[in-house]
Image (cartoon, rainbow, N blue to C red):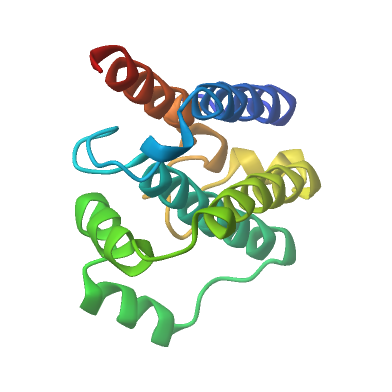
Length: 164
């Protein structure tokens, strides 16, 4: 079984990963930020919306965990009906939902969602990271974070910029 990552290490790693994404995004010419292909068929704006969705969702789960709450049966049923338990289906669903959002809004949302997630993680008692949560499939909460997620998208965007 994977060992949970300590909270301070998680916060630092997630912050660094997001900073890497922000750094690469700052190099993208404004006229290219909505151009498809930066990450699969996604534009840089789509990637930022994707990261914002994930961070807002993680923040919500961490906030719930801090309060000792879980989602209600209606929410779980809706997620199941929409297929949101599957990562690829969820990504496609939210990409479609957010494709027409304004760039300035998406950039601000990305910043706010990342901050919200880091604050929620900071406020979570360390002991809670040792325990499973409703969505971790029995794994300790502190072992399920993809600390390189944003950095991997940054690398995709960097490759895409280099191909132009």
